Image (cartoon, rainbow, N blue to C red; front, side):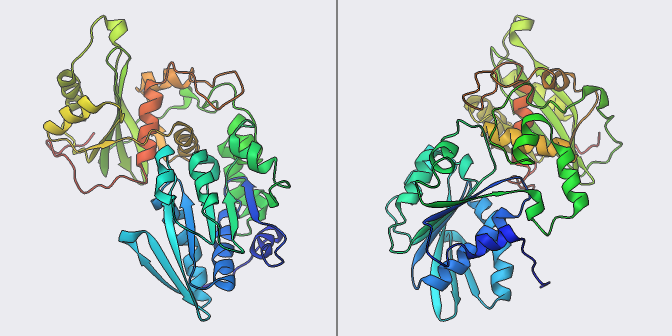
Length: 411
């Protein structure tokens, strides 16, 4: 493994626990600033230096997120330093041995209000909460309450949200009161990030997203949600063949229904065409069966590996499954979905093609509520926006093994 380089701020994260001054550490700031890497490595070093046969918690918004953002970054470093590592996937736990010590680390997903029950009752010597601002308050507080072993500490990382967010008000603004070390990271604090890469990330965002994810500020959302999107620059769908196909659906009876057909080519997903039906404008509601027929026509004989559907559309999901479609209920986390969609659009991971007029229209009108108290989007002109968000949230979680084969074809 190549020699590791740490910035001064990362070194502070690696060493903050050694003198015993603080009970917690909070690292927030810009994306790709190296805070999660330093925090995860430091957490394991602290646990393995200070404790023997104790239990610890590793938390993210999902268990897959724990494995991707925490374990995958820390494991190569720890193994290079002589630690042995055994993961029991079915039990969501990792045992780490080294230096004559052995400790167990449990993996938790703090996705919704029901997640607090998963960590309730366990006794921990420490807990690391990655993306803490995206977790429900009940889960974070329950995780903190589990740290009752003498010498236990709490570790947080997050990207900024709005200034009225409970985590900002209760932990960051009260860091001194809670005896927590607060460190704000910038992209310059990540020595693994080249200048050209930093500049690329800075170009990816504007407005609220720029101030939060590049400058690391806790600011209120305002104006258009995707204020960087320019409908005039939409591309023509590339020539086939495409590698994979998916369809994303925001279902509506009285409200509009929006379906997007997505094809992958050279690692990029293109929204090549869409279906949009507004029952109020048309003066007639459609049945689930009619929508299934409309989706089949949208598929046009292509091999659709997955249909990602609004999770509240239970009857439509069942109707699709009866017809043999492979259906996945969408991840409906709005703010996280918006953040990932903005990143996907700016990085070119997804492309909205010409002819997707409903999507282009909604991009130009989809905006934040103007009360400034919370990050909330206005519930209008949001149906194509929702189906696009569902699709983006599926990119790191959907498998492609169970496709629904109609007749093979290409766009």
